[in-house]
Image (cartoon, rainbow, N blue to C red; front, side, top):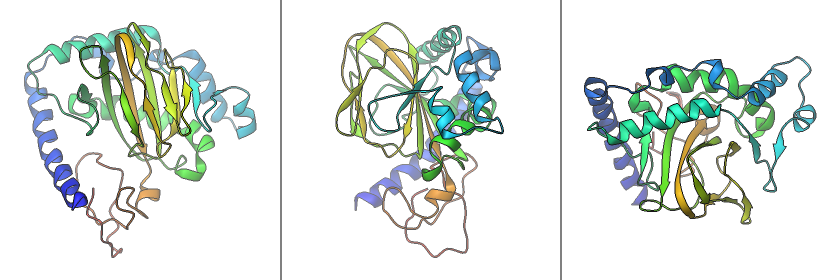
Length: 275
């Protein structure tokens, strides 16, 4: 019964999201137009160095481990992705949108204060090239066993933690093969992430890359406001075999945008209807 309820929720979400996106295009005037189009100047030099290594002919996992910071939690990696100057402009754009009359969508069932970035028009001009050109070389080396070499869709959103709003995030896994979690800034204390066996990962700045199915959560902040950019990256080659929710082969509903990372396979006889 809960699966049927989730099917209905996702189908309804698709229609409402398209309606919100159309309204946003019509009535919303961006504060910082430049943040909607990815430029290499937005990216941290350390991140570009990692990408350069991973795209070299002699790149290996062993070599990458010498350049990237690992965490106590297994296969969790830390590195900067975005320059602080860009993060400042990006947060200002998010706050400007949040204060506008434009409709806001809820990206998942766990966060109450969030912005679904596809509805603002970020996907094709920002997050698709970020995933395809810059993140793919890293994920292909780090997570080749769980779809990291064939990520072909994503869902990008921001979440906000504030003393008067959401303080934390309960233990969960993501609807993703690989997740990038970027701390955008603002002044806050506490709010560490915890993974698996409750090993804490301090998260005052930079970004964390981890497997989407790695159970994790966020401890409460104790002061201030925190904005996080979350990118769920999905591999249809993996999830076409098995729906991550019901554990069966999926039957699909056509969509004109990224949904949950599946691609059509009309030759399959399957019994899950999630898309």
